[in-house]
Image 1: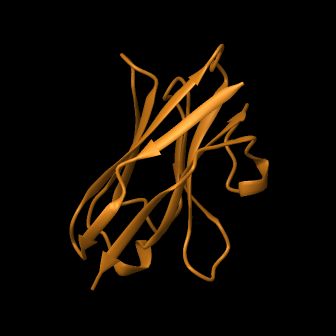
Image 2: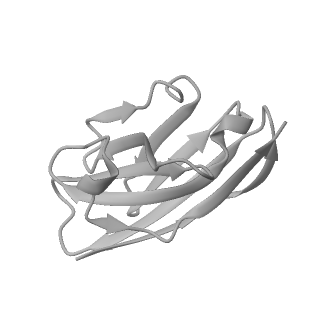
Length: 123
């Protein structure tokens, strides 16, 4: 089993930055993908970024590719999402999610979910 706990959300002005953290635990995370997905008010949950546990494969939604960076700390089982140049459109609840094998842009492909952390970007 995999447990995921997000943190780091908050309020920020447009143009600002936030770093989200996802603490992951499990017996064997080799071969897993950790993703960040978000859900804005009144919208469906959407893909933001994902990373293979090894860090060798990273993918981003086009809307965040030049502004967000996903990475994993080797010393601890934490995946981060560094968000720069935040825009009001980035507002939403951000979820850390996990799945076995290759990454996916589809929320229903992920088996494990954190509780979510809220990000609000004011204009």
